[in-house]
Amino acid sequence: MPESNDTGTAETPVVAAVTVIGAGPVGLALTLDLARRGLAVRLVERDERRFEGSRAKGIQPRTLEVLDDLGLADAARAAGGAYPPMGLHLGPFTKAWRMHATAPETIGTPYPDVLLLPQYATTALLHDAVERLGVRVDFGARAVEITQDEQVGTVRLEDGRLLRSRYVVGADGGSSTVRRAAGIAFEGSTDETDRMILVDARVDGLSRDHWHIWPRPRGRSVAACPLPGPGNRFQIMIRIRPGDPADLTATALTALLRRRVGPSLSPRDISWSSVFRPNIRLAERYRDRRLLLCGDAAHVHTPAGAQGLNTGLQDAHNLGWKLQQVLAGADDALLDSYEHERRPVAAQVLGRSTELYEGLRRTRPGGLTRGPDEHQLGISYFGGPLAPADAPRTATLRCGDRAPDAALPEDTGPATRLFDLYRGPHFTALAFGARAAVAVDRLDWPPTGVPLRRHTVLTHTTPRTPREAALLTAYGITEDTVLLIRPDGYVGHIGHPARTGDTADGRGASHERAGAARSAESAAPDGDVAPVPSPVNGPPTPDRYGVTAPPKSVVHPLRDQDGGDPAP
Image (cartoon, rainbow, N blue to C red; front, side, top):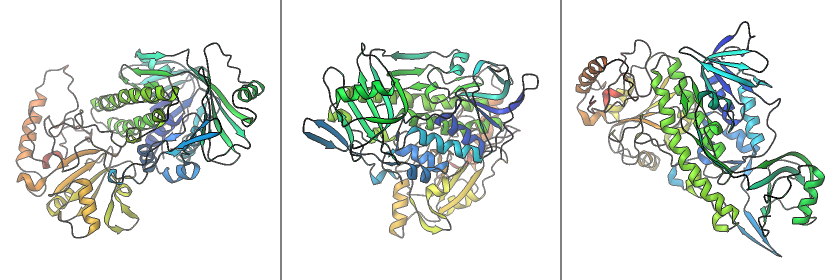
């Protein structure tokens, strides 16, 4: 269990490992990941209570995989429901179509469909999980000043308390206090002329088998999406023009809806309402020394395609294990890989969600269809600082690709699928083939930082059963292979010990080359900051995954197995 979340007083500040600002889904997910790693984490939220609106309600397949890793996928599916088909009301007729496509079986996921889960339900699941680990959200705690030095980041709260920690992460939305304190530009635009009222309310007499859309001329369309759970609750979306008033009182909203749609849409028991303006912004950087950005603090999107919350939760999943490694003594440069991997994803998502939003504005069925691009299962960090383009690969996987799920060759205890092996805050080493099994068994893993779990999946690489054939095909295994799966579910290393002529423990000629590269690194001039190196084409210390503990001369065990040339 992590250390106490005592926030101390202005006179006696308490030092924690990480302070997270913002207790929305992203801040909660990061806090949960850090807490399950045993780190002392503090979570503060400026609002007095948990967010109660439905706002972001689409959970993509890749995000469900993240929730699986956090142990929450089953609870999420129980609280949510299937996305309803769209129903475009055209006079007496209704044109129906399915908005979200199902991911193909070949992608290897147990969650092929988008889940309809209101943001308040996602927040509640994550909040409850955080509290079960002994971390409480400090509600009503507004950060007014954030400073940093070489050792700590300090957050001063409005009530005078000082919170000191090794790192401060801003998950505090588009108006992020952390981003402003870091002096990071938030590039993009906000369209003040394009507004939409969002309302969570009960609507009696309206069918729940469709997401209803009533197109209206001159930018006055209305939509109503049924929300899972009891009470006939809907998220209602009302587009308003620049000159229209944005009166959120129940009387005004009811009158507006009756004018546009008729008495069939009469909201009652309104629990949340807001005015939305499309924001399209991306932070220039994700990090300034001890200050980092996550979720909407780093990128804000249009609501089209259900991408914003999903991208933010995956930010948190990428950052959590890297913070643990650095706090355990790994080189601080590992945290730079967070921006290098996640910012390009956000930029791509911004472009796609903006394109989809234009289709939404025109209320065209073609512009309201979502496909594999929105599932986020194709995200890869290949070619980035932790996944060099010249690293070894299999027939289907490259370093940096998402590791797919597949059934294990045979059920072994509670584990029946690869995701059962990956679930949890650890690296996973997989061996395919007898030589790879010996190499994995002899791995010397550092005692601090993220732990390693080893599994010999098969001692042969020629399939003997249909189940083995499906697994080997999914991972492209054609020879003895060692794979390292990162804690966030991406392939961190691929090695072929049988191909290289190394000894069974992987310490042959490549071990000698690693030593030479290490000596070359020690002669580098002071002040040079190099990117986190790869095990194939860079010096082995600091390790590209940050799997090093003092002394930092430890050589990553998997680096010595692939036989690649660690050129300086």
